[in-house]
View (cartoon, rainbow, N blue to C red):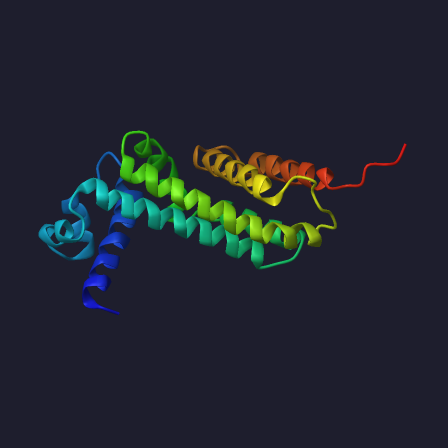
Amino acid sequence: MDAAVHKRDAIVDAACATLTSVGIGRITVALVAKAARVSSALVHYHFATKQKLLGAAAEALVRRRTDSRIAALAAGYGLSSLDALWGALADDPAEAERAAPDLILLAREDPEVRSALRLERQREQARLAAVLPQLFRGLGTRPRIPFEDLAATVCTFLDGATASLLAGTPADDVRASYDAFWLALVALGQAVPAR
């Protein structure tokens, strides 16, 4: 790997970790530079503005969240996939899950972050739409809703479940909602009796 690319990646990783640990209101280029063990000038060399740095961090964090969710769903079959996904959400949420609320707020004001989040959401939905058919086969059903539309619904629900967990809602309560959500989706695919 090229040294410049390696340094840039190290800076993005440091920005992700710093954003997660101190929050959006306290992150500075100097803090990111210190975490990456580089000079602030080098951070500015790779990212002309703090907004560009935050955009790159947002993209990396949300991509990691997507990768975690898709890997969990692909790890099993049927109900074991759903249990793995629950684990990815609830068992020690990744930095990407913890940073998501700050990124969403930042996206309201920052076009770099808004663009990064929008593009990554499209990627997440496309990847999820590709995995959902196998999941539902394992559950013994096939929803009548196109998987692309279903993926958008699932992404939104997962974001809400994660936000609830991070806000302190008891995990058992969120898990009950999670199970009810998936049960409803399975029910969508059940055969309608002939009249």
